[in-house]
Image (cartoon, rainbow, N blue to C red; front, side, top):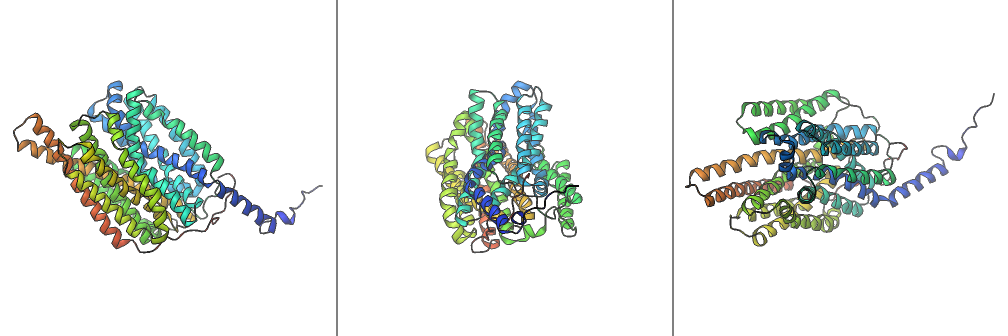
Length: 509
């Protein structure tokens, strides 16, 4: 009977040839790292711009499909609910099954859901498609960020890569407004969903060719009680905020949802301290750097969404801008983000660390919003809006690029996915809270202004601006609070950086 020949000594693990082969593979992976960034950045852009691109298309979709104003919010809420509620689970699945694999699954699922939504012939199909987009987005986003974390380890290169990635994350919502305006005006609202298909195909092809194959993390198990309490708690909180936006904070169902969601999240934290294999190891958030970064990006999301939401109202309803012109009006914000995140952060973050960079970004956000607080119905775009948007963009670039880098620095291989998920969770929960809270404040101020003045067309316009500027003022306070928290919580000094090649590539993942 013949037997297979034993492997040659040179092929055995630990031999010189095996080490040389591994080193050569690691060098090949390193040489195509910027193409990896391009693929991961496209994936991130698709997830982020989808939070706003559909907003511009909603009036056209409503006229085409014939659903009520009361139902319109579900097209936005369905995506936010699934995405925000499932991010922690998505991050853990990436750790368990391999981040390249879950990235590809997320891209395919997101593209198919986008095709379904674009072809929707009824309201139910559109909402279902948006929910499925959120599900696959929750798998895709932490996979992309954790892959970026293990691709770039050199401090200077890491700063540049995370600067670009942070710029995409911060500017994606503004790009969504612009792209939504272009597609709605010159094509159809359906292309606001169809556009994800070519983006996903290009990102997927780039991932297959350039993204390194990384083995699943060792010793990671799915914490079912943690999954249940986290998904229900986060999802309930996002839904409660969305409901507060339409039904008010005093609505009994809204209050009950907030109370139950908070209790579920408290139970989740208590469980994570006791179970052997937690969904979110508390060491991830108890680290001062990462914890401070999560708080900073959550507060920034609260304030930033005020700019997108209320400035869009101001430009379209008060100044008469078209959706396309409104989208173009946000380009100074994008320019500010690109400037600070790709030029300033890569140079400073490796030298001085995130503490003063993030706090400075929050102070820029405060300054920009205080400038917008001075808006009147007769204010001009060039003198009163453009400077504020650019200053805000500078601040957001400093915050997002630094927070994405800091929140994933020094994580264990087994925690990279869930640490990445928390960054996106902070953005999503902060955005939902900011939209609901600031909408309530603005509506209250507007109603009070109308009742205290004799009604006329000019009074109604002034009332709307009064509500919007109050929202800007409150958001400025949120950013100022963020600056204080960052200076107190974040330690001084550069972030810890993992060694390149610390996580071994493995075929098939």
